[in-house]
Image (spheres, rainbow, N blue to C red):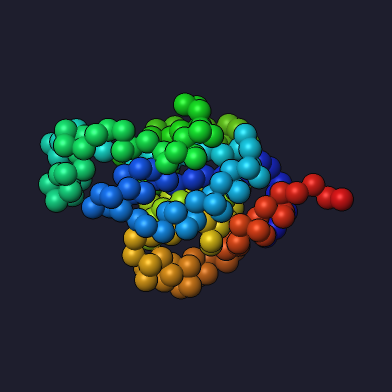
Length: 198
């Protein structure tokens, strides 16, 4: 990983109850990566944002083809599912504040209004990503971060998916295609880089 010239932020993608608990979107491996996500949150204390994938009230409340999507997943609209399932998992909820949560209605956190401008105004030039799912919301956010000019680091042992084959394919074949813009690193490597020099 190259030296930081500006400010680095840790972005946690969609570590929410709707994925962690027994829903049709259950991602069991959240429990496996949670310790590493928490370790990154500690290393980036005061420099972590939490993306939350927000659900529409009904399919009709979603735009365009998202209506078709939520017709298939209508059991996950807030008219049928307790909206509290959108909350962060307990250990992360305890670390978060309203100003550190970014609500999004699409895969990428960069589609949240004003998000890119917020980062630029804060002098951020490097983003460390953790969370779920590697092959969907994490990947979409990573690509948008690259397009916006940010240096991206993906914590390879702090991301996962309900589809572990797709997860591994992204880590092994997709992200390595962009070595000038995306680094893959373990949690330990990322945390070590944050430690002050002796």
